[in-house]
Amino acid sequence: MAQHRLKTTVAGDGSITIRDLPFPAGEEVEVVVAVPDHSTEDVSVGRNPLRGSVRRFERPFEPASDASDWEAS
Image (tube, one colour):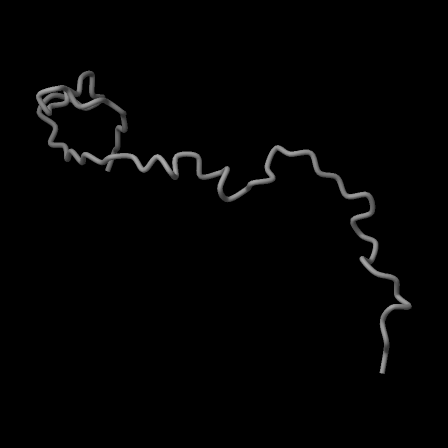
């Protein structure tokens, strides 16, 4: 199913107008009206809080602790 998404504002009389749809005249379409959840608009910030920050690993493949700190039995 082809989709066309747009944002608009509800008029004072409670109506919305949709113009210039990319579908031919007479085409049957389904209209779904939803209110966006503003708390999740920028999902990438919530999932990746360090994205875009400057981070650098000095020695990423070195062990985190000295080998002598480990006991072998």
